Length: 89
Image (cartoon, rainbow, N blue to C red; front, side):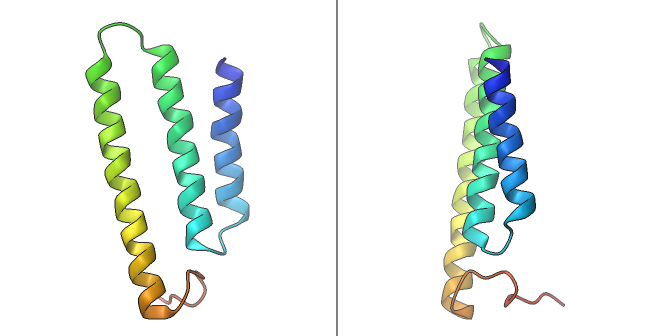
């Protein structure tokens, strides 16, 4: 099972490293990495640590909502989610 979790985590890192053209692809690959870390928590920490897993899910849900908010604002102001048109000085 740890091999599957490692494959999920590694796939998310490869996608994030290779296809950073769109913000949506970057956000989806980051959520895939988060899923791999959560599965690692789930399979390695058993027993009474449910509050740790729920806290992790809460923070990742907030991170996902923040990323989608940035995506919507960026697409409204700049006309798309291409990262090359979004210049930071």
